Amino acid sequence: MFWNRMNNSICFISHPYHRGGVTQWMAHAFNYWDRSIGQVYFLSINPREDFISGGNRPLILELLDDQYKDNIFSVPVSTSFELGATEYKASIYKKLIERHIPKGAVLIPSDDEACWRAAASVASSYKMIGILHADDSAYYQLAKKYRTHVRAFVSVSNRIHQTLLSSIQFNVSHCEVIPCGIPTSSFTSSEPKKDQIAWVGRLSRYQKRAQDIPAVWNAVNDESKNVTLKIAGHGDFSIQLEQYIKTQNQPDRIVASGWISPHEVRQLLAESKVFLQTSDFEGMSVALMEALASGCTVVTTRVSGAEDFEKMARAKEVVFLYEAGDCQSAAVLIVKAIESFSEESRNRAAQLAIDLFDISNTNARLVTFLNKLSPVSNDNYTLSRIQILFSPVLAYLRWLKWKLVS
Image (tube, rainbow, N blue to C red):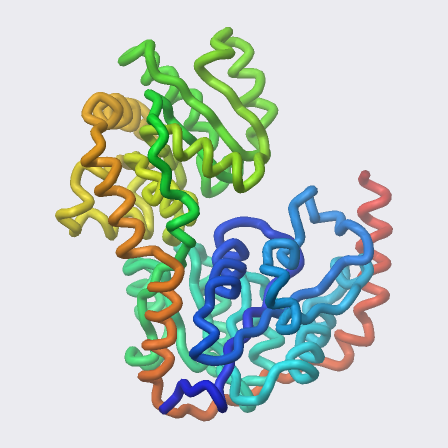
């Protein structure tokens, strides 16, 4: 048997900062792993001082349950790590793997190439699993580059799965669709819902289409004067959004709160009837899962993950899809969803999340898939010693450039 408690373990390898659904899922998967199955580990690095790219985000290590600290391994690093060569970063992760993780373990890297490269560099002694979290060219490029070192691929949606298979030659039986999971019980709530829309995520133009929020709100205003909108997040559209909100002179109806705590996100979703997603592309959005678990009706662009609901009869009247950029259609669907909202739709949304996305279920599906894999021999990716040795010079030059332009 591929998976047994004595001989096999699983290890998550992550870049240092929490920056979205990927790291959130890895933390959930680690914290809620069924430890009766076998050992689970988590590797990351711990900045001695805030990285330039940190953006005031929490460290991934802060999201991990302290009761499992004996299986959490990290090493302190300076900004020379952040600004250094990918090869150097991979060498640090590789040392952590070889020092703390038993050979034969499954390695699951985050979406950082240094993590993928580190796992690939020990592929002959470990089982590297590549998880594609978004319908994004960056993931397909990673898959192509490291496919000879990867034991299996997991895609979080059917579109990603099909794109992967059409873009690389790989054993189909070693590819599976398993959405990321969330602890759904953390989002259940019986408190009254408001005629309110929630938008949660990175307020960026790229991918998230945050620039559509004002247009959607204008159209909602034309349809109904009783609806409110609360926006949680921060990004390159934050300043413009704040300026737009000021022009509306509706402080009680439209609010942008910036980044808020996980508890506050849960509260926002618990009190909202509708969750709005305006993205150009996604994987299977963690925020969308959390919204469903909170009993929200979802209005979303027709993107990877969301489109999988179209074939589910039980998702009818719970998930509404529109084409990216069609803000008028989004507004019509929002108003319809609020007007037709009921306890039945609330319960249906929450049950859908439990059935499809509960972290215990998705972890179990991952183990079942790993059990089915046939033995494969993978070669190691060879790290360049020259690039590793040159990394301090590269880091210094990058730091100097940053100082000059900042």
